[in-house]
Length: 221
Image 1: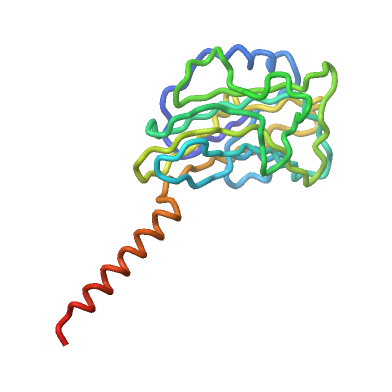
Image 2: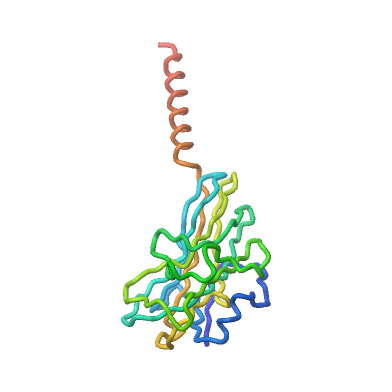
């Protein structure tokens, strides 16, 4: 199977598969490809977000969308990703999606925290979940989007852009059928942009205007 990688440089990733992810090897697995131009039946996406300087409890959501013409049945997933700026502190990955309903809502086997405890904490993160009723699954209808977890993080006190790079060697969906070929599935990496908070920008702008007004009043006529 051909797997195409994105252009972002990657750090060394774990060579041993995390404990929770091993169950994928025994089931029907669709390994995902990273391809910007591929026509995708399933799109797994890290949603890009902005975060304020030094703020905590920021959220980046992962979603899966079925853009194909057939419904697919999903009974599990795994996310493996790297945040390429160590200044960002990874706090957790939970099943509290807001942009789209969590795919296994009320039937999460591992939630609310989805992080694999066998992987040491750091910039490379592995998270996964299973439908909690054996032999059952969730149907993802054509055009439907569902959540696959939320990255919680703390932003540093400096302006930066961090890439959230999905690893196709771990990131995967477990399906009840093999109707979706691997070349019809796409990963989309995300970005975290740390910016000044709107309130701080407004105060700075007001301060600049006030100083300009004072200087204008002091100017001799």
